[in-house]
Length: 445
Image (cartoon, rainbow, N blue to C red):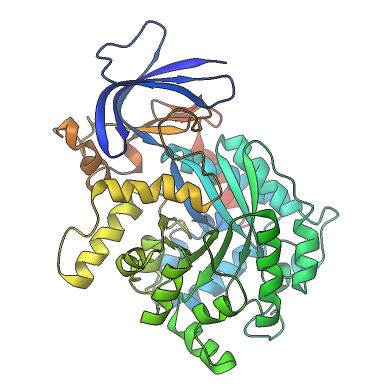
């Protein structure tokens, strides 16, 4: 149905505009945008606050949400954290994964996220036996996104090795299709929907042997699909890659045709100057996940240098220690301030672009992330009268959103012209905390 929204304040890149009317057509796209409308037109839905394009969470592992708090006990490293993650992964079924992901994606909607890139490698039953439907786990995620009212790019992930050609360990048997050809055959059966697109992922150079990388890249290239890869997240991975192949992970991916404008490297934390130049010259994207990178003590990636070299930036919540894309945007700037001891590396507008239009582009939704005619009618409204945002000057609403607001300040969310969140309540799953509690508790029994 056609619907008209009146936005009290809206981010129409590059600035904040008061009194914006957005008309949505039957197809869920914006048909018209009118500025300078001081009073809401009759019949229009009023969205008070600061409305931005829907946020794009470019990197998610939905089942990691069940780790929240349990992995904050004590100390350790990425590798010890991974052992806890394996235990949760071993308990998931298609039904329990659907229940958990539906609640997690609803939590994302409450945070203003309208599209998620799900880096999906939990494919098979324990022991590696395929389900009757080999894509049962991926289908559960696609259905969960629909139930939560958001869009998804299922980044079906090749994960074939425990490390540089070694056989998968007992936990990783669920992840592996055996070969890249078998991976390609399975994920070719996945079908796109109105709310769902299919992309590809290489888990890492650890998990996909060099000789198999080209098969994954070719599959994505033939479909013009997004291709994501965990890249140089830990120094141990870099050292092992140098030992195995005599080159950095970035160079290895380049040698096998993985880099390019439809590819996104996730984390890109420990890079050489040559790596940065290579990623920039190929327009390979970078997805920064600052909260996870801090939580796992992985390090601060060279986001500024990557962007200056030509690598577009996007943001992700990754392990879901928190789900808050405003925090991820803020953290990227503040981490860079700590690293360099200088301020102002990105404007609020630039950080919003990473969280919106560039994030959507990384997920293959180039028609989203803008409030303009022809774009998908996906947007989120941030309160300007909460304890964090009250007193803000409206023309500085972008700065308020990025540097003061949190996910808790998201008041309304619209996807395809339909209200998914209204006054902070999810329209399809009214009690998201209860759904999360039940889904996580089921994995502890």
